[in-house]
Length: 226
Image (cartoon, rainbow, N blue to C red):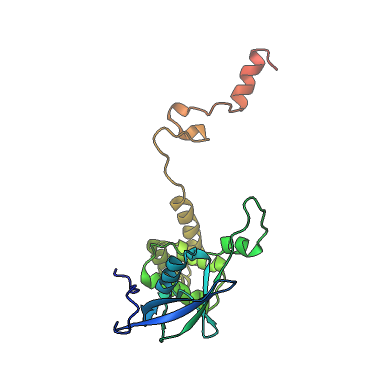
């Protein structure tokens, strides 16, 4: 994708671009940069970081009293700039090397559920709707988005069949069948060479090394080890 920010000469004949001023918090002097008049906030951040040699991840921008965010609900945000607009740029300093930090916010961020970058657009939109509009907690979001499409089909089918089973007085059988189905579907499958903890499921009833049972006790008694 072609970057929407293009660095061009500072003459006023460039169509679709404006010259803005950004002031870094601190003793640094204001600087000018020419960018597209309608630009992604992410691209504007990258352009300023590249020119000022700032770390992009630590860069914060304020325009007309409002902090600029890269995206909202999974969609990139754009900003419309005018000639001679002024930006305030803040660079968050990195902690000193070897310093121990106790940041509860970072711990909270680690506990929050986040969609993988490979998630589809509709899934991201649905996720942001549930999180930002309906304010669902992260534990519920984790459960919703951790299930596969096949599992959702099974759940929906279960809720469709449950009233039918109740109408035909088959509710207890339906519940028991559901329980056995959950057990059977979660048994898993052993890989070649794996040995079960229960010898009855192993070839030639082979036991795990160190198994202590009645046969082992009998052997130890006969050998005089007990």
